[in-house]
Image 1 (cartoon, rainbow, N blue to C red):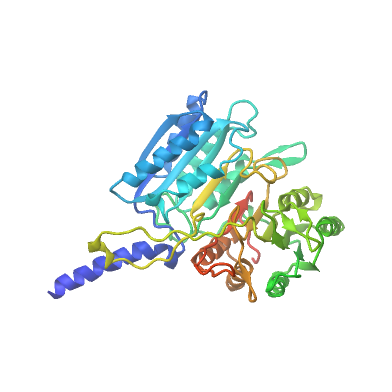
Image 2 (cartoon, rainbow, N blue to C red):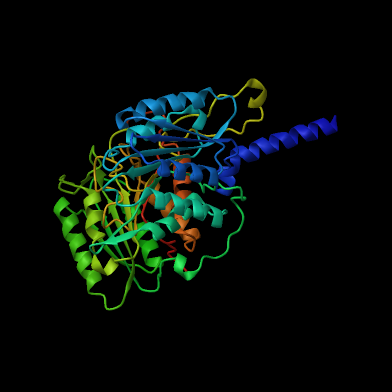
Length: 471
């Protein structure tokens, strides 16, 4: 009897460990079936498809298929793919969908990503969407991108996918007319995603100097915050300003800027950077305000300014060429209040082994890689366009959703400060993923609803090296 009890408890512990691996280790377990799908429009070269299949195999995907379809039929094909996954009897650990189309035709993949996120079989599991351009006009050759990814998977089997992509961006970025064209990834992952056969929690060797940004030069931060009619904003300003100073940033703070003042302060910030006598290592810009229905920032005068335009403007600063530029955006990006998704129902004989899990945001656990796709949303500059290299932008909410804040400050800024103060020497992308994990676990009760609501970050990166704010 004792043997049976011990065996049962061990089985329960194994189930709990698998379910809780993300929370305890900060990494996805990816223990189920890995499935991949390629949707390609007519005329995609066979070499590109073969390169994709080689990447699937290098990443350990057991099942993949290809479907040829017109771009306007991609959504229908994804819906069929989702139904197939939901009908599977075995658990799914990860899904990778590659969308290949002529340049400019995948301008708004948001609806496609949402369709994949609705898959019940993938709830709480990482979903990777790879967007590739084919044919004339593609800024980056998809074959070179895919070959580089496959080679890195073999050489760095214990790296997370975000680390692999950062290294890959350094290799494939191209210089043209004084600008650097670079792919972009967009992440709402809640943990490290390692798809190779190596144990994802294996300690890795310290990266060499060439794999990290040189942070020995000057650092500058600009904080633009609308305080008026935003309870808790003062706490965000105080917390973030203190963090910047502790990390060695020369910090400029402006409160209650008008829409025009956002531009003026940014111009002055650029002039300040250009007058530095020595090299500049990093710039950080925090934009905190109310947000409009399409993701606009609202100045203290109620007028609108596009945050992506501000990001694009600073990315052209000559003093910051080749240097990391970090943007933190604490603002609503629409009016949607996400109720989240609860855990999947289990058979009665497994429920007592189940470790209770909180509801997850509907937009969490997605990684989009824009190798050369023209745009991830209807607003802002296109990922992969010139001038986008070495930029890290963090949004407090998913596109179209509310960013939460109360008298104690915002969920995003307060969690960010807490995480960075504990271990500022870690890779910033890893720290931001941890921030997102904690934000995703929060239940928010808004002023206009009695039901808990969820939020998750959106992290966009074209960084080409690892960024550590304290070395």
